[in-house]
Length: 183
Image (cartoon, rainbow, N blue to C red; front, side, top):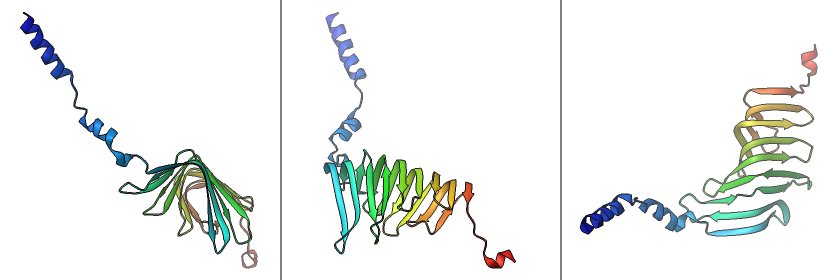
């Protein structure tokens, strides 16, 4: 009878074990960990001895050890841009990620751009291409300035908002009538 109990115990052990090999591989996969973590960072970007931008963030995680390298700002980001007249444009978001190969920045969660002229853009996600100085999103956004007070879905704009394309919009847009149109 004891042999039978031992046989049942052995069978129970074999059938109760799960194949956790894939989970164990994930735990031991060092590539999924950042190559570096920085806290309370402040990066100053200069060009020709002039400050062009200042980036601050509570945490930066560097994943440049990945196949598709990126840098993550899990606790938010603040970037202050300076133009040639030292005017400031401030960009904030709850989370940000920058992809090294494409140089695209993905801002997520309570994204706000406060432009020096009083214009404000708000959205939940915004992509930024710093090389092309181009902003775009498929999410709902609001934009307010002297001439606009709009809410729309889809934004495709240059950094200075002089080229500004949207999807379906709702709001107010100031249109100036030219002298030729008045006649």
